[in-house]
Length: 191
Image (cartoon, rainbow, N blue to C red; front, top):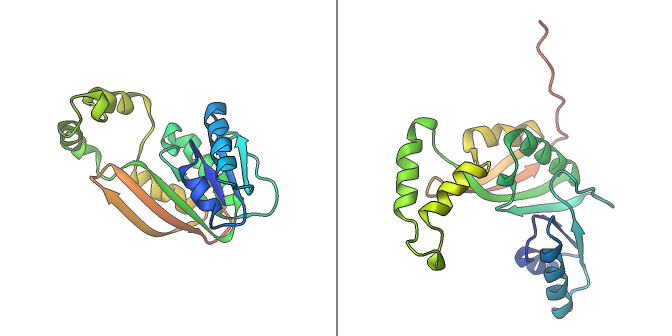
């Protein structure tokens, strides 16, 4: 199992109790140090921590049975996101599973104002209580969340079959995908 964007290890540590080996990948040395401490304290010796990102992680050993990523892929613009998804597909064995959860927009451009207005309406007034309107606005300006109707063709293009989707509030999506085939080579149309 590979956990990309492992953070403090919430998933990686739970997975290590069920799977033979977990590779926890994160760009933050502080997060990886914290994760190592937690794994040691839990007596888990089957977690490897690797400092890397979606585009710099180099998988060693046999192909993985599963890849998990939560609230990390939106850090990449769509061009790099597509390359990251291709890399993930290559990490997985045929039949391997990708579980992706992230901020994914489940609406069309014409609905943006209505959806964001509703999102902001439910924001916390106090930052100690949750994300504020300012936090949401900052995310929209600086992060790279993708429309669902763009993400799903990216997944298909690199060899994934979407098995299930779950959406919450038209803003958060979770996908379970199976690597069904090698990523097809995209051909240019002859001019």
